[in-house]
Length: 136
Ligand code: 5GP
Image (cartoon, rainbow, N blue to C red; front, side, top):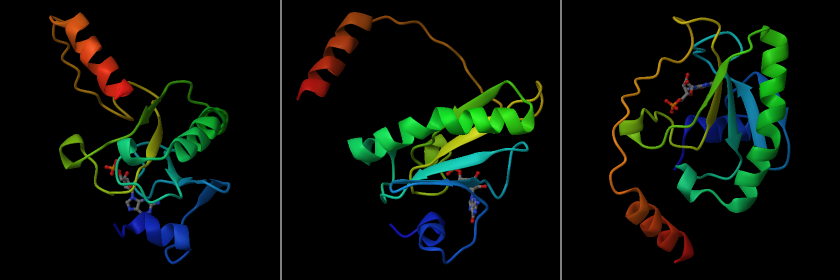
């Protein structure tokens, strides 16, 4: 699917580039939640994380910690969230995989998370189902 990030990858839309290699591009978010909000995207055009190849996933995984260290060093903010949304219901607005690195300087700024934990009732059968899905 053609997205604004495809255009950024092709250089048709400008961005403030932070990092680039053969498989990955990182740039500043145009609407930062906080200063230092960086987006990390694969060059591969996958819509959601489950569609991404192992190679692109590995390439992103390899540079994410380094990018987080740079964001921490430059902003001086120690706490941060790494966020990756999949699907409109999960707040995905651009349908090209992207990881957000979002500094969290205090309680009010940065990412707010609504987290209402439930109870794990069928843990073992669910884990077994997932193991089977992974094997299949
Ligand atoms: P999502 O909600 O899909 O996880 O986040 C999409 C992100 O892309 C948003 O944080 C938004 O600010 C950012 N974004 C959308 N369009 C552009 C753009 O043209 N340039 C940049 N740098 N970021 C963008």
